[in-house]
Image (cartoon, rainbow, N blue to C red; front, side, top):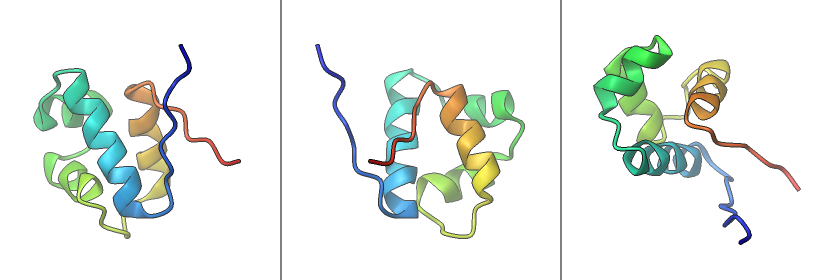
Length: 72
């Protein structure tokens, strides 16, 4: 079965994908924040699409959640 691709064109798109993956894995925001070494407030801002989030930390979160960011 092919994986469903999600277009990520904005910070809000990426935040929504991270939130969806977190919830699919039954992780609370606080649990993922602790596992990834960021604050729950920062993670919440990322999930809400705040454009000023540091991109390196966003990629780190994606890796922890098993997400691949693909540009075609």
